[in-house]
Length: 251
Image: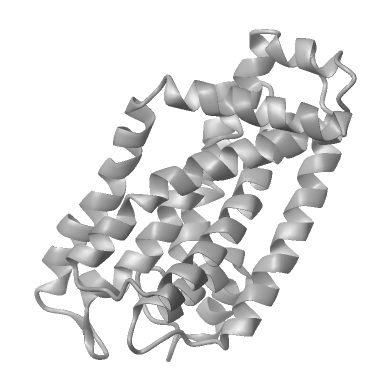
């Protein structure tokens, strides 16, 4: 029970920090809206994917992108917590490092989901179906993406020592994950080398699940395969992140 109370306390602290910084929500919406209404409308004027407009096609992928960026960059706060010595104060408490990690993951997931939820209004505006099925499937996919990517962000936050090094590494992680996820183009008829990269990307399965939730044409892979692959990616990311957090130096 004490461990659960400690995890809740870490999560609550993350929520209070989040609520004191409403500009984070505003800034996180700028990029998705530019992709949807700028890139999507411009390219969508001459491109359609099956029976849907290009703007409609990319919206599920942009929802996944919003979760990806928010969740992975959440790991940057670990570096700042170390610099401000806040993490040292937390880690001398009876709460285990794995408990602190769990609280941080829950905080990052909650932050990411709050910010991504605004895009449901955009989906409704574009005429995408908002039904119990679409909400249930999309929420499950977004939660799994958020858990996986928050763990990845915390992994890098635990092994890197400066914000500059974190941001440099993230440029080589976030953009490949996004571009090779099928968020911007359909997964059918691709060259073999590109298809191999895409199916190695865990975000691909989240985007495909979101396509099942919102698009009339559905996704490419069976929905159970999407959720099975996402679940395995989550377990792997949680294991790596927890291990790195347990070995993290506070110097």
